[in-house]
Image (cartoon, rainbow, N blue to C red; front, side, top):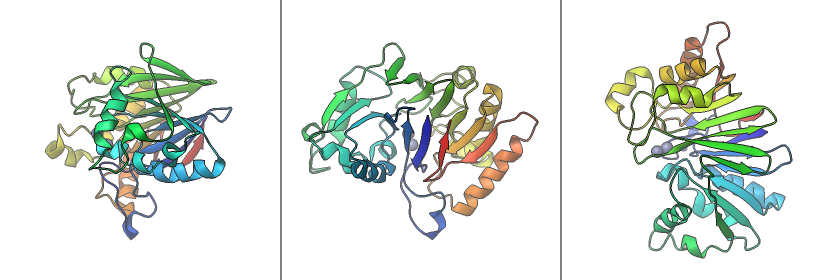
Amino acid sequence: MRVRCWGARGSIPVSGPEFLRYGGDTSCLEVRSANNGLLILDAGTGIRALGCELARQGCLDATLLLSHYHWDHIQGLPFFKLLYNPQATLRLGGSRGARAELPRVLSRALRPPLFPVPFDKVPAHIEPLYFEGEALRVGSLLIRRIAASHPNKGAGFRIEENGASLVYLTDNELALRHRGGLGFADYVAFCNGANLLIHDAEYLPEEYPQRRGWGHSHIEDAARLAREAGVTTLGLFHHNQERSDADLDALLERCRGLLSLPGDPACVALFQGYGVEL
Ligand SMILES: [Zn+2]
Ligand SMILES: [Zn+2]
């Protein structure tokens, strides 16, 4: 499977010369199966540029999973070109709840006077997805889901194909168990042996006490999770909106310092345009 990042920022998009290398768009990942099937994780503002690329490719079929419904994870959806193509099909799955929940939530967020086109009137065919238990198959990708520890709940996803595995677990506060969330050991088990773990690493440890309960993790907890789960690479994600490129370089170096024992995971900080084959 191939993974490409279209947005790694958290909370709100940013722009300016200090954000050029890591990028300013919010959460969106493209995952391609071996036979080029398309899975999109989250619809932050990064999904806009992905939609332009898909239109150029003539893509008419995609599956989108949303980790949760906070703005920074759905904000790009009204500008996702696939929605306006009557020949396109978008299968849509979310963090929890019944089959109809996700279209209902999005119909509340995307409608006049908040946005001129009501979500339930977009020309594309929207097909709600259903997890059987906590697993879902999309083409050759097997996807499992875990509840995240986050205000208003959320989910992480583990995607496997041909022995390769990606875990996408953002907006997850490892040091605090929110309602509906799980404990540290559960996340270690879920991430076990993944080739790439993309995890919320919004804070430095010294920033965390003032932001405890906001639903995000600091790099020490993310690094500990990666080490205990024995992942190959930790991908730092959901960069704080005030973190410049230089700040993120420093955060990455600190996290690499935390993972410097023999056998420890490699560590990268995701940026717009980051791509990897697993
Ligand atoms: Zn977020
Ligand atoms: Zn959130």
